[in-house]
Amino acid sequence: MNKRFSLLRILLHGFFLISANLFSIMAAFTIIQLASGGPDKILQASIALVINIGVYLTVFRVMSGIQKEIMKIDNFSMFAVILLISLALLPAVFYPLHYLKQGYWSSFDNLLAAWPFQLIVNGLCLVLNFYILRSKKA
Image (cartoon, rainbow, N blue to C red; front, side):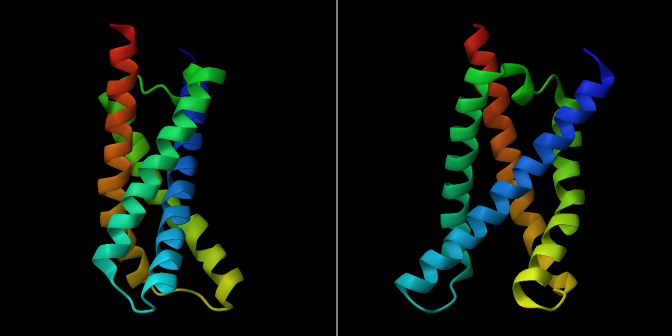
């Protein structure tokens, strides 16, 4: 497969993952605020995980029907690069969005808090992607 196409797939997958991450975190935050009014980080992370995986699998199914190659992970190195790209791209997306929404720059601590969540959730999404595509071949 063309290297440029693979790089484009990796970047698009990385942006898609962080978009799903940010959406799920904000949705979980909103649900927690509406339900209890108080911060509960563990419950928020749990809700965000479920939302994130649901969004990923929904889009994965849609994209697999439209263009299967876009969501395909070729090998473990591509898996690792997508995961690392999603971590690296988060500041490029998160900081401007936070500034536009809040009017001030977020602290680096917020990014440090998001990275473990991203590692777990994005890793799980990519593993699901890999095994779903492999099971379809069998």
